[in-house]
Length: 133
Image (tube, rainbow, N blue to C red; front, top):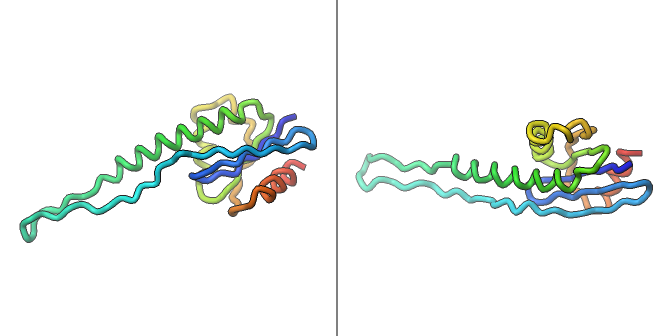
């Protein structure tokens, strides 16, 4: 039985695969761009209108990049029997939502989504082993 634990944030996903007693870890980078949105410009007249930055353009680009990142993760874990997702922030919940909406056949295999702090590689493997034991 193949069990997989995924620690992820917006930068990196660590995919731990456990088959029997053997555990392997694979790293997947997100290639997500982090934007530093700068302010708009002011009118040349004294009380003139101010140009506002359109955040929706940046947010839409991030949404598409996250969708690509999540699709790559799902392709890596396609043959798993049980999956646990953990990590800081809301990226785990976003991955669960993406799987529920676009990968229906895979959604029942997700055992749990949990919050966890940053961990070293050994701590991630140990956490997954403990979860499935």
